[in-house]
Length: 210
Image (tube, rainbow, N blue to C red; front, side, top):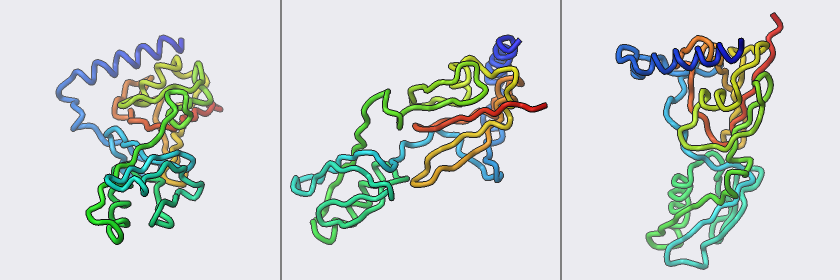
């Protein structure tokens, strides 16, 4: 029964996506538990505590450094005692470092690269816990969504309370929780309930007690 519902939901989702009158521009944006509108675009990669970054300062090799981001989300480098990295994209951090170095270096040109160990790196995985048919960890890929992940884990169990599912995401030094409507997405084919995922996301699917 669960498999039948899963494929029925997928068929409805594909049918709706092909319908011009129900185009993406007409769908409501996903919202978090507080009703705040969330972006429906693929999230940019953002740095987090524990990651190692390479900072290259062009024409100033003595300032270039490979350094971990501390648990407080900050790091130190030559000429800069403390700078926040967590929650920023590598490009944003590069510009911030250039601003700080401008007091010491003429026209600094900085590039920040996040060192990633590969698909097995837990920071690059998406975890699915609870009432999924096959709870597991999946490698993140650009553009992956909640629907992709639920299909990959075999759908929801018959005991799942999909509309009470929670997405936990690391944002800077904090973990933020968002509500997911997985029943609406998978069992009713409501593609407006789909949403993009980011590296390190965890989806928790609780059991229904009804």
